[in-house]
Amino acid sequence: MTQSPSVTASNQVIDTMISLTRLSNAHRTIIAGADSMRCYVSLKRRGFIRLATPATCNIPRKQHSVGLIAGQDPSATIEAALTQISPFLSDRAAIAILICPSERGLGLTIRTRLQNMGFRIEAGVRCDQGLVLSAYRHGLARMEQAA
Image (cartoon, rainbow, N blue to C red):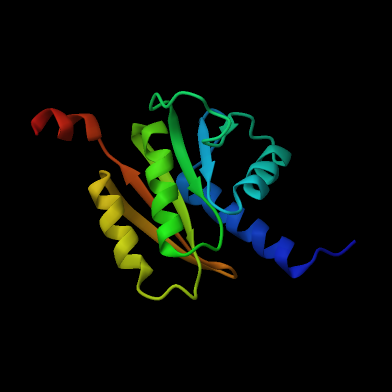
């Protein structure tokens, strides 16, 4: 049985997100974006069990160590997804974001937004569906205490 190109590209994005965030079964993961349910199902099939979306997780307690934003969305939606999952992410969280190739100039907007949230971009990997950025938050609690 052969897989369609969109399924193969989707698997490539999921594989890239897993490797960039160093995702394991021990991590609590929150997923947002237009393709969040496809990403959720794909990760469940791979054996990841500690998954949630903002809709399925009632109270944001900074309990998730990994955030994934998947989907071919315009910048406003990606920024909204960042704002939506930010309260769920811990002080030392990792995040991976899929950016559509048709969105020129979006990288700077997302970079600024991530920096304002206490993240530092670590890597960017090109995939068939676009660019996957990964960023890590290092000790946000220390920054908030200093301020």
